[in-house]
Length: 407
Image (cartoon, rainbow, N blue to C red; front, side, top):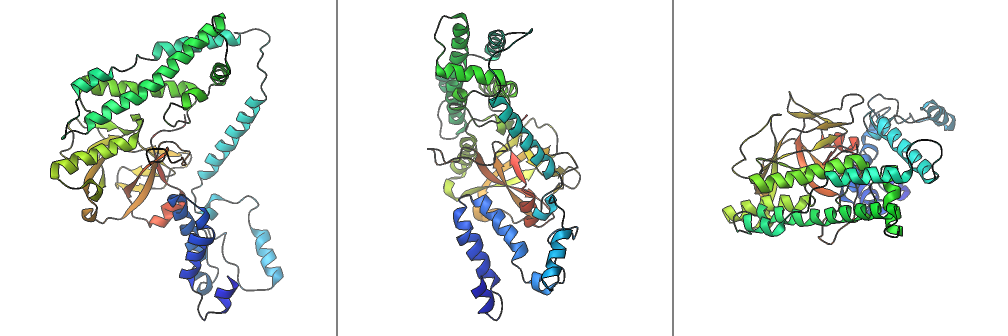
């Protein structure tokens, strides 16, 4: 850094940004979306304006700015004047970010407290065995039987013109594995309580998780990503199974509940595959154009592409009047999105608009691992949302789309 500043007549900001954002620090960042955020933050500090503009502001309020040239004491005075607890604005975030941070810290605290909780109960109330029997019985009553995939194949055979048939059957197979694990583990828990089978380490982990209201690790190994507590997870799973059952009984829905898919990327690929085969275009030349529709019900599917519902905008909101992305209301962390039309088209024919490319994640965790399919276990796709503000503004806000919330 000293060499670049001292040995050049003008500071080479482009070179500095590349070295810092792509090599020194960016080279350690493996996620493209994280690197985009890193480079965006650097652009705020590595800029000629910081030299040319007196008291160059790093935040909208002006609290955080570049101090004027002076002696050592002047800089110390400026540092002492800064808030002890940094406001979210210094990072470019919305004030609601404080609420999110506090919620995460609270969840971590309670998770730590649960680790120290004794397993025995004393006094009145139900025993652990009674609670487990009640919860297991309730979940088993809600859980439907496994899907008949052979019947599904007969009703929705693999055809050249309709890739969604394959998507439906594959989803049924994935959910069948999860249903079988849930039903068998709960049945064995009930038997173990009665002393009919041995309480194995695996079953003990399931019972401990159920008592704490968490998703058992045995289920997670066969499940789609979810950060919900146990009760909400079961309700969500039942809703997903009903979504597939309705599809099987009544045909493809007019509007697809994208949050209901186990492997969301297969659904998006199926939508592109139908378009590619209809117009005989190589699928690798295709992308999606996105059109956020009116907030109402739709009873007919589009000619091409798919209508999608069930997405949530995190750290921003969709303004129904201006049809643009806008700042979140205070204390509202997420906003449900209206139906979005995913329109397949050639990548070079996608019209240029003022949009923000928002990453779509299955959960608010915003990170995942690369699975054997070559896809992330959490990231789904990038979706363009109309806006009248620079993309950098929303990048610093950390705006993303989510398939499901944590509650």
